[in-house]
Image 1 (spheres, rainbow, N blue to C red):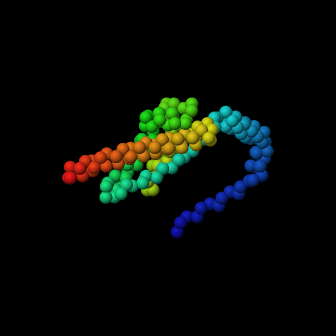
Image 2 (spheres, helix red, strand yellow):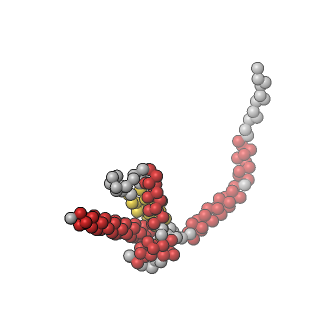
Image 3 (tube, helix red, strand yellow):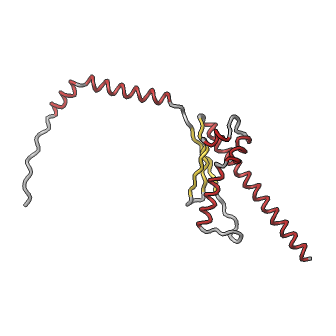
Length: 170
């Protein structure tokens, strides 16, 4: 059998209470000074707001392009990189973000990817809530406008190739 352990000594609550009473001013000074320090630091810190615009990567028809998981991940990574690319930020700065430059936007725009849902999040940060929302929305809208323009160019090129091929057949 296991050896018996000696019984625990009783806790003397009164002794601890007396020690606390003797040090109550020290405890009060520590608590008040720490609370004051945290208050001062929080008041001195600048406020930062974050706003998020979400984009869904829609797949083109499967007969035209491969839609395997690796292709989708590559497309998402490309979109994520494009959202913080210098020319896109320059266009966004010109398209309604007054007072912003490419360099200032670089520190205020982040992009992240949810690969399970094919969702890209564009996060804008600023010292005002409206500014953060404007940054996220304008960068997302600028990206979408460029994507649409690129797709329209691709459709026109494809149509021109097909029209030429039909003309050659006649």
